[in-house]
Length: 87
Image (tube, rainbow, N blue to C red):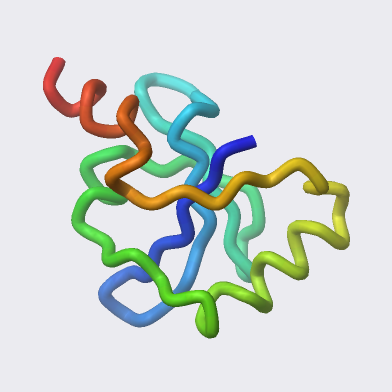
């Protein structure tokens, strides 16, 4: 499962799954607080890519709950992310 780790304006890190549609044009995401949720691609686009030192604890949490098939990609590699915004 492809994942991009992003950091919002407040500095909170979350996992964004650009190929996993949640509903109504939103994509799946996961954070320490709130856990699974929806994230609109426009919001994800505004966020910065998180550094490994920042996302490692969240990655460890995801692995501990069964996400053993994660493929960490960059925002640039999330082609669907940009194709969706162009629609």
